[in-house]
Length: 374
Image: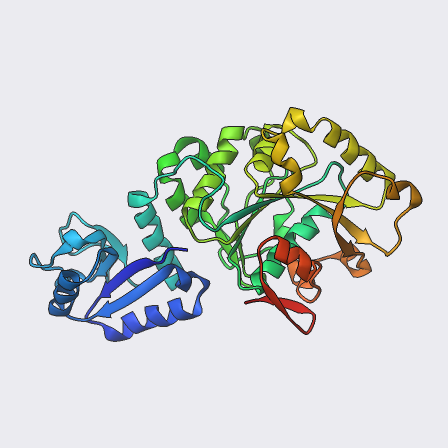
C-alpha cells in the first residue's frame, strides 16, 4: 500500500502534535508518511531538497511566495476560522474539527485531484477481492462474511466489507460513531466516476469494534437492482484505487443478476457457501452445470472457487458424500449465533482455519485460538 507523503506546517506545535498522535493511534495512520514543520524556512528547505510531497497542509501565515510548491501535489490551507480570512486560490480546510473528519477531508480533496478511476483488471496491487456467494438462502453467508472480515482484521489486514444484498443486514453487525448514511455512494457510482475515490473516502464508515471499513447503505432493493455490471466494476475499481485495502469482501445474494455476475467475475476468490441440506447441494450442482452461462472466464472458475460447508456438525449425510463438490473449508455450527444481536458476538470465535487463511494469502501464527498475521 502506497503511503501519502503529508507535510504539515503550522506555528501551533501542540495542534500539529495532536494530529500526529491521532494518526499514530488511528487506523487511518497507515495511509500517511507525516512531516511536521513550524517555520516557512524549514518548509522551504525540505521542499528544495527532497522528493515530491503529495499533500502540503499549511497555515496561511506560513504560505509565502518563496515556497517551492512546484514539488507539492496538493496544497491545502489550514484555516482556524470557518469563514476564511485570507484570499487564496488554494483549497481551505477548517482546522478545529474532529480529527477523523479532518483526515477524511484531506483525503477527499486529494482524491478529487488525483484519484481518477482506472478500468478494472485482476492484478491491481496486493488487494484481493473475495465474493461470498450461495446458490440458496439461509446458509449463514453474511455471518461468515462478517466473521471472515473480522478474522482478517485480527491478522492485521485492512478490510473493506461491501454488502450488495437486496436487503442488506450490515447494521446488525457493523456500527460507527458517524451516523451519516453512505447511500449517496450509489449515486456517485453512476454520475461521478472521476471523483469516486474521493466520494468513497468521505462516505465510508469504520467499525471500531470489528476494525473493518464499510458503507452504511439504506435498505433499498430498487437501488440495488438498478446496479449494472459496469456500476459494480466501477465501485470495486474505486475501492482498489484507494490502494488502502488488503481485502475487499463482497457479500451478495443467491441470485445471478448482472450485479452479482459482475461481483463474481471481478473476484480473485469466490467463497461459495453451502450447508448440510439437500436443497443447498442440489441448487449448487445445478448452477455449476450452467456455469458457462454466468462466468466470463469459466476456465478460471475452478481456480478461484472455494466451497465452504457452513454449520458443520461433524457428520455429512450419505447422499451428500457423492456430490461432486470439493469442499475446501468446514466451519462449525455455533448454536449461540442463532440469536446474534451484534457483530461483537463474533469476536471471540474465529471460524476459518489457518490453512484456509493461508490459501487466501494470509500468513498466520496462532495465539489462544485466534490467528494473527505475521
